[in-house]
Image 1 (cartoon, rainbow, N blue to C red):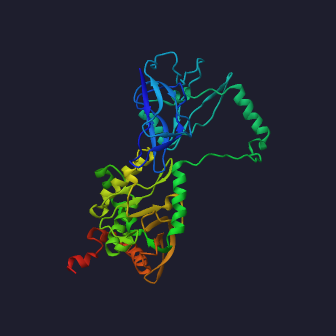
Image 2: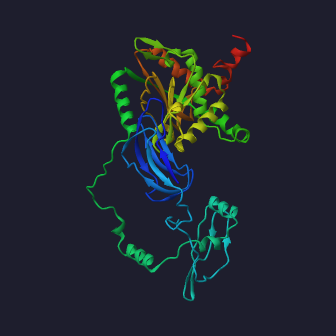
Image 3: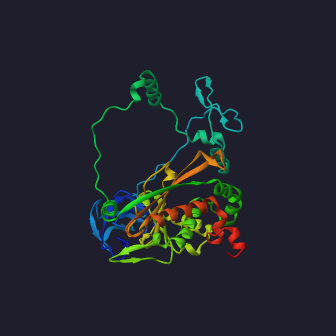
Amino acid sequence: MIVEIKVPSPGESISEVEIGKWLVENGTIVRKDQELAEVESDKATLSLIATAAGQLNILAKVGDRVIVGSVAGTIDTEKSPSQPDEKPAPSVTKPKEKEQNTDIKENKKDIDAPALVSGSKVTEISLKMTPTAKAVMEQANLSVDDVLEGIRRLTRTDMEQIVKAYANPTQGQVKASREEDRVSMTPLRRKLSQRLVAVKNETAMLTTFNEVDMSKVMDLRTRFQKSFTEKYGYKLGFNAFFAKAVSQALLQHPSVNSMIDGEEIVTPKYHDIGIAVSSPKGLMVPIIRNVETMNVAQIEGSIKDLAEKARDKRLTVQEMTGGTFTITNGGVFGSMMSTPIINPPQSAILGLHAIKDRPVAVDGKVEIRPMMYIALSYDHRIIDGKDSVGFLVKIKELIENPNNLLFNGKDIGEVLLDL
């Protein structure tokens, strides 16, 4: 039986996509639910999944523009994995020759093992093993001998290459080249480039900066990380604190949550915050809906789920559409300070950066504190300087006093005194 592989729809407004990459070769025997290819649109990247097991016949080539719902390939289910057309997976066989076994000496950090035998002489080498590798080995009920038997033997060719490399130290140096790589831009990258240029040309974008002492948030995170992980099954990060602080600050500075629609200014009373996450296809911005109704643990859970979807290329267009505000964290890549660019039609974006120990003045004394620069880029057409600076100051206050996040941005004393 021939099963058709049809192109899925990335969204209601998209009628055509581009074949980005086939992950398997034509004629390969595939299994059911195996990922076969990536299709690109100007909004998202989707995967073609095998709906049955059999032999793949590719009909749409890489770079082809195809209509949503059209057939990109077929699967011949008569060609099962047991048929001779199957391309067998590589297998690992144990060496036939019997090698000399010796005792294994173990210490806290690594394992030392005699490993090379040459004629009647035994060459002692030290096999270094990390604690993590050791744990995996023990979990699989394997010994060091088992591991060594699974390693491919050194051949005469291997040894000649090693001897040659030692005799000619310059052999491994990179040679000068004038070659170039040239690939077509994906639909998603083309759309992104158009939007970024439009932001620079169509908005009055400015950026204001501040710095935050992360001591109390880091202490809170350290003290409760174990209990938090045991209860929820995932770790507590910093983005959740900032998302909660953003939501509280937006209540006091609603213009930062606004956007322009024609000649009108629209100010949503809800806070749908986009969190930029890294994925194999680049930076994606899934949306967490109604953050104003969530606590820090719920926000962290949503960030975790969306980040996993982004890495597995399972984000839908709906999960990346909308949003009233965006948070991007360049600090995870080591950025000290940057000017984030607005994600239209939103009017503001918060940029987080690396946490670094720096000397700061505290109560008239110089102390070393973990500090982070934060940046707010905003559209000056609808957000005044007073609101942009006040919004960033409020973020600083909430992060430096995280207990206030529990009381809608108010000081504990204000709550107790009903002020």
